[in-house]
Amino acid sequence: MKLDTTKIIYVFTALTLLFGVLYIIPTIIFGERNVYTEPSDITIEIKDVKEGRGEKYLENLGRLIIRSNTSIKLEFTFPPAVTRFEGLALNLEVYLESETKNYVIMAPCIWASIECNRILVLIPGFDFPLSIEEGIYNISVKMMWNAEGEGDIIFTIKFIEYRDGERVG
Image (cartoon, rainbow, N blue to C red):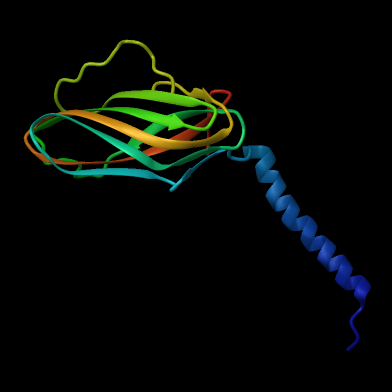
């Protein structure tokens, strides 16, 4: 059986166009993501936290990669059995540091099963999206807590991209 090179070229061209369309159409409709983290989720786990006030600074937890200027907002998830505490109030400061630009996102009362005071202003990156410039940012976190009883603090931070006020992805 003889192969017809013209037919092979037609088939190859058709497949290339098909895969190109399958990639381009969703990108046009949904937009390409500009926000990535390495690792994909930043999980923080502090074991055996004692009663009372405490503070811990965690450096270089990962990298936030911003491919082009956009907006981000923090999102937190806690496992179902987050705590053995009788009560816990947890506050964060998330530091994003690049060679050219630095940001601090305040995140008050991300977990509050006891009294937790926060300032009564809307906080960029926590209550609404924060505009952020293109770059690669090292992620560090300062945790502050007030605990009643003892337990473990475990949660995950995600950086959610927003464009024109709408969540992306």
